[in-house]
Length: 318
Image (cartoon, rainbow, N blue to C red; front, side, top):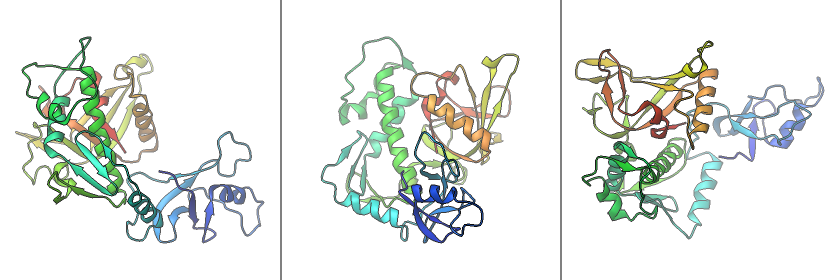
């Protein structure tokens, strides 16, 4: 999301990124001098924190811009002018977006829950490499029924097609949670609460959710980076979800171990960068996981039921 302007908490006025940067270069004693890159927010009426890049730096290669000052923030959907403008801009759109298991018409997202479940079922299957793959133009009917085929594996192209659909749906859900004014409907055009079809680990136990079943699970999590100086190939990230969950007699916070080297492959490099940053700044990360959990075979741990080398394909971070 771009932020063309921000409200300066120091000067009590709206500024463009260039204006803010110019003010950060003013000498001490000047009443317009800005002294803190973090003293910005979305607008006077929206407290969404912003930070100015290249603050007080006279020489830079990329023009200064405003970036979110913290993760998991929420704009005020009713008073934030940016959210109102985004809503009005979408209302003027003519073309709709079709993402297979859901579509967007202006500010309405129409979701085929059966197709979402079908996509999840396909993602939950092991992948089959180096075989003839079907066209990426897969019809909605095919998406619904592919997961019931007798084959115990799914080809890589089909897998990535469905991961992309689910990831896009998660992005809209995240935008909604951050304040974007979307309304969600089922295929009968009845309004639904999308939260009902995502599983918050904070509420999984009280809702009687079986973590061994495939869903889109999400929770905030902390990331630790474990460095092996003697053998860098053993460096790994440990993701520890915030809330305690249960499988049978095991009660624990689900955890994910991601080997920095072995888990890297095409298309997931940016996720490694997100994990590095989260581990460094020690801020909670919102993590979405497509799939199911399982008990560790010998310890009292709860982990994703996924091949560790493929785990990054199943995760979306915010």
